[in-house]
Amino acid sequence: MLISVIKSEAIKFFSFSWCLIGGGATLLIPLIILIMSPDRLLTKELLLNQSLNMLYMGQLGVIVFSAAFWGQEYLGSSLRTSLLGTPDRNQWVIAKSLFLLLAVGMMTILTAVSCLVIGTIKFKLTVDISFLISYGRHLIGPGVSWLQLAGISAGMAILTQSIIVPIAVLGSMSLGLSQMLLGVSPLAIYLPNLASFNAFVLPTSPSFLEPRTGLVVQFLWLACFGGLGAYLLQRQEVS
Figure (tube, rainbow, N blue to C red):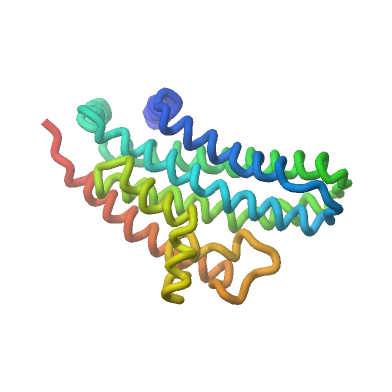
């Protein structure tokens, strides 16, 4: 039963234009920036750092398709149809969350591998097993950050019953609003996208939280928005 619900959610994802736009942006924005970067001598370490930076740029796409995936339920009578179609509400929430987790995980892998392939070809680098292991190890932090940011975006979509609000709030942060706020107050480093900033840079910056600390702070944002969103779904009345 759970598998069939996940398949149903997959159909919803791939049939909704906002989800496709967000997924495309997640993959294409980093690759376009990498392709358009100037040709210069680049070491493997710099390629790793640049790939991590590109993943940070891909956050916007994650925000968009996560908000769209959950926010589409509040368009018309979609939520009513979903809840009546799956009598076990917990199973529906779990299935929808699992599909989003799988989607973010796949996008992380695809984006990271694409950056690696394009980077090695563009900058004519030769990679070995030790570098690939290091590359994969450094992807753990960004991958966790993407998953948590997706959950925050989804939770915000549920709380506001809107696709636009989480995209407007979190999207503007990823496009530079959080950096502007950081210039006003040092507390801005605790914002969802800046908290995990050091997971996307090498070497880490002393101006931001340590990678693990930042991921914990981001998780607290997830617990807040995700928990409230899950509670709201449990209390949602359908007729």
